[in-house]
Image 1 (tube, rainbow, N blue to C red):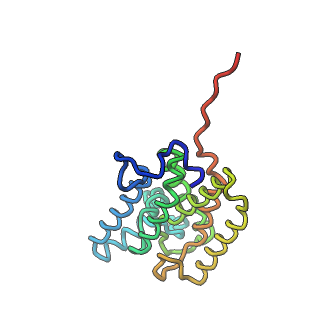
Image 2: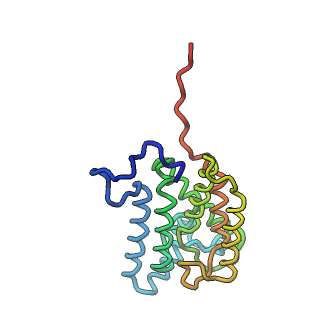
Image 3: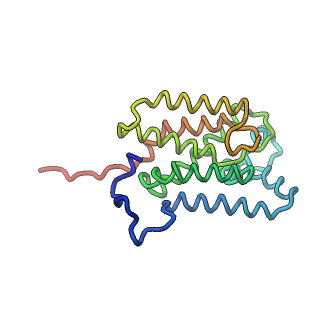
Length: 223
């Protein structure tokens, strides 16, 4: 990425560099997502469905007074680590590696994790707000990754490599609405697409990425 070249080595990989050249937060997010999916594969269907209902984000649960309070609190984060299938997981993790790595290198580990998780939380609640009666659990990291993608576009615009941000954003939003209505998005496996969450995360990334940028070092005052 054009905003991701400060202090980076040349085109050759150094002898001490990792073979999987991903920054730590992105790497651990991928490991956790894969581990969660592997553990779910060991569960029976009934236990797995119960876990998805408890840890997935169910919009209707927020209007049901008898729903488990702990589940309501943790679901906006935990739903981001549950996926509908291997294809859903692989598509999301490849996208996270592609867009998340340069953003993490710029923001640093803590700022990136906060940005990523908060994008997923906002994306989830956009879906809850627009579809409050839905009893279907929403799962997947797509909302958070959409936020990272929005952040990437804004960062590219800041360095002048993306002069026309609006057309890209309009096309991306239009594609999400289209696939949300008609289906067919890669990785969805025929399941319904939470297009509102994708758009919510994307707009969050566009609008807030500047809040997570490290402050430039303060220069000493001249006397």
